[in-house]
Length: 288
Ligand code: 3HC
Image (cartoon, rainbow, N blue to C red; front, side, top):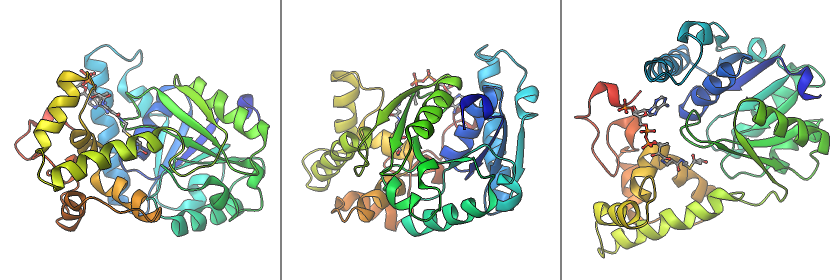
């Protein structure tokens, strides 16, 4: 499969990453089907794309009308129907190895023979995911960052069996949607970015759990003294506290108590209206 062969893309998952990836793929001119397991999930994801496209249009950041971009997006709940004609599938399902392997095994059955099967996993092994298929050479990681519409970087990750042709096509695809790809040739837990971000977030979590500083002090230090766009807690709220939590648990790592507490209380960040910060009083226009 070369970049010229890619016309139709399927994105599995309509959560923050799934709908964001769908949006950037449609903005680049591809036809794309966004699939999730419940109608409510795909409708919510579609609503977030509408919100985001309106915002971008208001600021003159897109050339087409939102409706034109939306016209390239289909929504679906049936997996087979979503991927039957896909040249490239990007899976953005929850971070559980068992679930991803199940999905990839189904993809192997339902997608055209030459299709590339990509995973947006944050840190799970591409090699292990690919082993659930009979085409591990065509399985690759494409790891986007939240929010995909604003974040430029995408890691293109080789599994043990990924062919150069697959990785190069994935790399060209990422360029074709206006993002900057980097190759990650070693399939290590967390790849490059999350290997750095994980300890950054954890260290902050331990400092607060031990009562040395509070959440605002740590975030303010990183933003105002170090010029980071967000501190570690604000970033956790943006990406979803449960995401980092499950990544660490899957890797057998200890999680700071403050993170455990937030997950137990289901205060997972912006998406639940409360996380390390409270978002319930925010203006509706501030967030999708
Ligand atoms: N679509 C359109 N507009 C959006 C939007 C979206 N998806 N998300 C936010 N906006 C809007 C806001 O509503 C706001 O609009 P307003 O000005 O009308 O109120 C505006 O964008 C803010 O935009 P700015 O460009 O001015 O904002 P910033 O410069 O602060 O950038 C940011 C926002 C890009 C999120 C920046 O804060 C940032 O880079 N944060 C760090 C993000 C990051 O590191 N992400 C990676 C997380 S790790 C990860 O994803 C890995 C995974 O495996 C967990």
